[in-house]
Image (cartoon, rainbow, N blue to C red; front, side, top):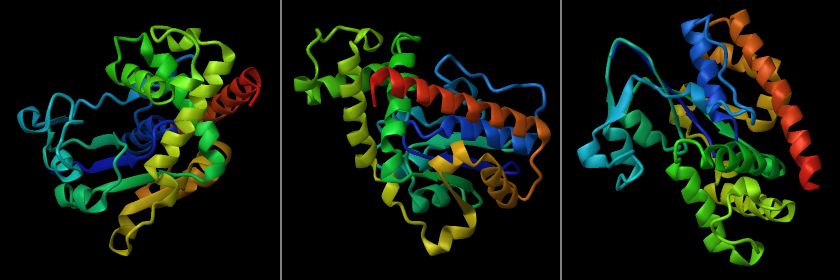
Length: 255
C-alpha cells in the first residue's frame, strides 16, 4: 500500500482515541477539523476510520470475535491503499501487527500502577457513563453489566440502574473494579521486542497528560515530521481539560 499504517495500542482509558486523532493531525496537517470532544473530554468521536474494515465473514460482526490476535490483524481490509490508515486497538502484539503491515508505525501507550486509578476514572466516566446511553453502545453496556456480575457485593442498587444514576459510593466501587481490569490487561508490564524497537514509540500515560512538549518532541522524532501549530494547540487544549476533568471527578468521588 502506498499509504502507511499508523496504530495506537493502549488500555481502555489511557487517551488512545485522542492520540490517534493527534497522529492524523500531525501527519495529514488537516487544519480545519478541531478535536471533537464531549463533556467527559472523550475523543472517541474522532476515530471512526473510513479506510479500514474487516473480513466480516471470517472475523465476526465487529472484529472482536476473532479466534486469535493473528486472525484479527490478518483479516483487516484497507479500503484505499493510497491513503493512510489511523487505527486504535487494545491489542499490542508485534508479530501479528507487523505480519499484516510490515511497515506499520505504532504508538504504544503504557503506564505505571500509580496511573491506574486515573485511567479507571477515565474508563468509567468517558466510556461506561458517557457511552451507555449513546446509540445503544453494546460494549459500554457489556462492560457495565460485567462489573456488576463479577462484583455484586459492591452494588446495592437494582441491576437496571444506569451507571450515571449510581450513588457516589457505587461509582467509587465501579472505578475500583475497573482498576483491576486495567491491571489485568498488563500494559504496565509491556516490553518492546528488540526487533521492533525502531517501529514503536512508547509514551507513558502520565507524560501524555502532564508533559505535552516532551510527548510532541518524541512524536516529531518518531514520525520524522514537525508538529504543526494547529495539532499542538488542539493537544494542549485536551491536556488542560483532562487535568480539570480528573481533578473534578476525584473531588466528587472522594478519591
